[in-house]
Image (tube, rainbow, N blue to C red; front, side, top):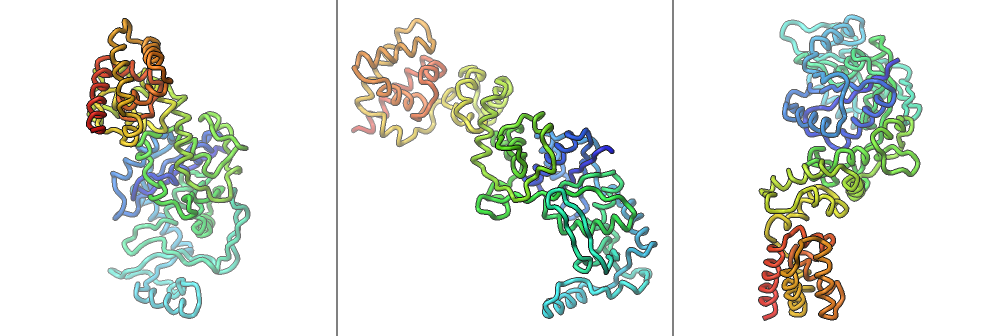
Length: 469
């Protein structure tokens, strides 16, 4: 048997972290088993579904490298098929027309609540056997069994039993004839040969209803694996304030796709204490049986840690292209600065995201726009001014503009002044970068260039003279 999983997003918004993890788990299990993954766009909510959302979802999938084997299939293109199945259920007595008004249904529910009962449809039209006359409004309800229980083995949750009396005669076709979620999902899973349904456990309540429809259609049940939801650090359901933003926003902030995948796979699945997984390793080790039963918590700091690991390991040319693109987006020209490839090697160990890297290297390509006030107060003073002036003068006598030559120049300046290395290095960092935190100072001075370094030391002199008056 070929394993077939599916990822069925609704195009009513962006692809967020929870959806991305669901897609990843389905993709990994299909790859692990030599199976297939189907991409299905569940767009029957005509009022809220948009083409823009479809584009964003597919861009997110493609950016993460989660390719699909079949699809995308759009549910709005399958309405005729859903109509056939609804009619089949009507013909075989597993569905019926309901003529109850919204007002009547609301009144029934209020009475049930007042009596301490669970609100549900009261089966008024269940046995009428009536078909709508011309112009008469009705919905179609599924005739849920009144006796027994729905039993299924969930790969994650274990054995689940739901009494049929707890379930409702759910609507499977609206008054306009359009199908509803639980009907379309069953028909699609049946027609597309889905063998494994891996989804968030917020869908667990739908599963017994869908199983009864599967049985009414004589279809084989898929294997169900309901994955616990992702929570925020405060234990509440993940929301925008926790980081539940579009996958493409993580791309824009400079998260690498392999880092996001690595982080997501550990949100609800584990292999011992291992934290870092290459993609092939993920595929080889992943199994839905190992999905954790408890909810995972989203941790932005952990994601940044994983991303920093991958930035350190990533191909330099690839990172260079990404950095160049981000600098261009800021309106920064690269002609008057160092080679991007050299910048990557100097900064990759210091940055958690590509946006962070772009922010850190701006002073290599343009004049300093903002100084760190605390660094200026601490390191730019009359004592450091004399050291900076001596260093600037020594620079003019260098024959070669290399990091070793610059390093020797720094050593000579501090030796002549009888001070230690940091006494010059720290104010020099502030003078040429605006901050006291930079990579190796000789490398930075080399990249800033001789003329710019001397010019910025002169600007530092002006700044010191202003602040010490």
